[in-house]
Image (cartoon, rainbow, N blue to C red; front, side, top):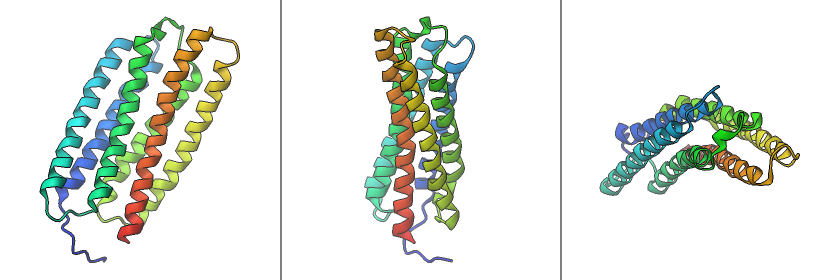
Length: 209
């Protein structure tokens, strides 16, 4: 068993677990965009609430870090991890908001490739919820987290590229293409942010091992 002089304050790890749960809740709401008759306004409004909840959670973490003399992880690492987790929800909320504000509900359905992007996000969110509780202790199984996160990010990249192929195929009017691409860009950024989280976790693992 590895010995550490740092305190194992469960409150810090609870913040990250709660953030992971928030993200999965947000992605679950986002996934409703693929329903037969989604309520785009309600989806957007609910995601604003989830994003706001996570902002408050992040602020509480920062306050605790700033008021604690010795933290269980490097302070900079905790700031980075909390920030990257918050980025995920920022992009998810922005994607849903753009769908509503741009009036994309007038389309028969969102592009299949965009729904595939959201499916990848849902898989990433499940992975995050599974592995965040393992952050405390950083055993060797954590390596599976960033390996799988990288694989899913590659799946997200492929879905995004296929979305671009469809958008530039002439199927949609030029203005609609621009609107859909902005939404796709936010979904791609959310996917990338999941990988950024895994990169921070990997860095912490290497540093603490």
